[in-house]
Length: 161
Image (cartoon, rainbow, N blue to C red; front, top):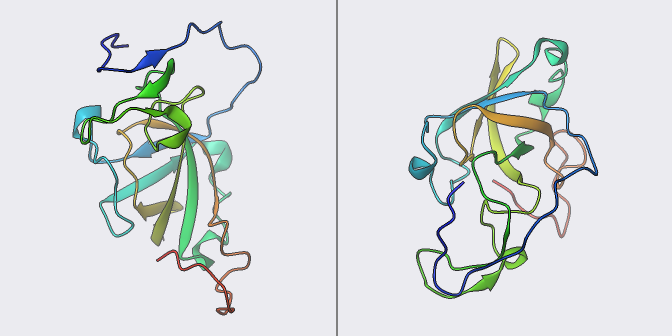
């Protein structure tokens, strides 16, 4: 883990994590093998990525193709977790960690809402991820704004695609 800090960044000394267990259910396959190559903010019509599930979970995507978008939760396993204030590269201002969508988080949990163009051989293909190849998968769900598959539009709906 890099220990270099940008100007005005602050860290906290963390005790070892011991308050929960996360079971990884698969891996995310992306074109990026180095964290530095990952897009800062991927687009919902971006690169083709795959969600590869462990064998126990192979049938779990049944019915997921009825949704146009999905939410994926993953562990950002290459990020630091001790910054309370960060200075994003692009603008030089310093903000609290919870005011940013930075991969630096206390529990390294990432979430993305992405387009689900197809499922091939039980493997969902998605667009909109910006994590490294092999990132541990925690969960995936239909987009939280789409409460039913292919629901007709209602007044006040938020458009995700």
